Length: 263
Image (cartoon, rainbow, N blue to C red; front, top):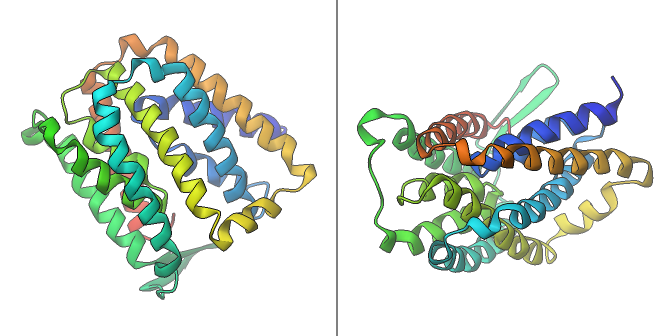
């Protein structure tokens, strides 16, 4: 099967799934790009598709957002995201805690990955355990949730997972959850990009994608857009309970891979 079709199908499936969960596109798509590109090019390519997908998703479902939630959660998240992104340069100097290989894969466990993975696993318990499923956070804690998700998002790029874990517990409907998540994600991504421009990572990302590789990136963007369009058709049928289960399952999966140093 041609590489462009593989990437487009993977992007469509991932973006459709993550429209409901609010996170996970980059985690699911990067390994697919890594089949055809060097790892650093795969990371840069995934970032381009992720940004384009967030912009389109916000345009498609942003009108469904709960404006009070976006303001009370999003503004603190923006400030904290910049702080987290700025801290990334300092924490990158810490040595890994452990490393190992799984076939051709080199896994590295770092303090940041382990901390974020444990935090995500903690939130996953609240999504999946029957005793906690009806637990709700008062909306007065929205600023605190924004600070936590924004900071860790700027630090490790996993802001969507923590944001989804919190927003699913504040008692808003499935459509408002999806719309608010999309809009806040786009805003936070903008701050992260602005902060990263002061880090060496941004310059490396700019030169990592060559002219011959852009067509495959374009296929990923097209697939992601199609995935959002397809998933949006069924948004009215998605229940809050279904979103809660999906968020919990994806949190556990990504938390395990992150803490194990695989992501």
